[in-house]
Length: 290
Image (cartoon, rainbow, N blue to C red; front, side, top):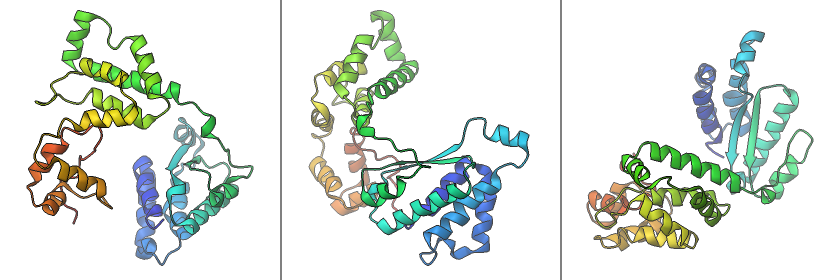
């Protein structure tokens, strides 16, 4: 949780620009706020809660405009993955105390977490709304995601538009239903399948989205999809070295760092990875970290 307060403050300043001056003022008044010597409670109070309160308009008319879209929501995903259990408990305790003292403030926290005792035990109180995602089906959400994503891509692809002119609706409603069923309830698989279908053609794989969509309907989950994608680059030099290195890394490395580690040039790494963007995100990883 070392950078938790700083991350929240940064996101808050971006989402609610009116808070930025108050966050800056807090740091100017106490430059040590972000140091490890300052408790998480104090950091959150000075950098998140107080700036948000200060930024809320005081006049009723302004407040109505401020809240016209509902309260602001802070989404925290995977809280259970944080190893600092004491920090997690401190955050939850302070958050609950803040909302007990300010029940009408237009701010909400949406926390997604596996069932962990140190988290659940603190959240089982009246002011918290608990939901069990094990009983929730993501089928309709994934169907909506696919429909919107396909529609946007078709609107910007003249090749697909010409295909539709010649052959009619693409994809058909029955194909979309079949694809949604094939994906099941996994958004990870949905996003990966979508990226695979619309990946730019290469010399080794000149297929179009219209060619790839039927292939995804015959795939058996992520294993087949990863295999299909990896074959695009397996003929290239250093393929096995680069993929093995990425798989074994303890932390992400920039492309130039991977190249240095393997004793090859950076363009060789890019050459392999550029065909694998459906399963490996390397955008923004070209510069070496300072």
